[in-house]
Image (cartoon, rainbow, N blue to C red; front, top):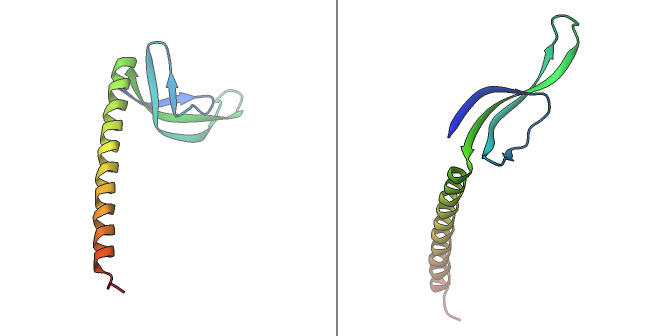
Length: 94
């Protein structure tokens, strides 16, 4: 992965841009006004921080994110089952 800081765009970039050889992920993006020194015309630009991955690297990162999320969901489900068991066993029988 390569990190690029302060990349200027003349349009608001997509959060994730996929190319033939890689993927750009916008980490932070700030809209700002820039004045042309000669004409004094003002234009809107976006100054962004970008993480650039090659395709295989990006797939690997997404797979790791998926695995982490799947594990977190499983742990949450187990926790909810334990709470449900506790709540149902703590109720007095009728």
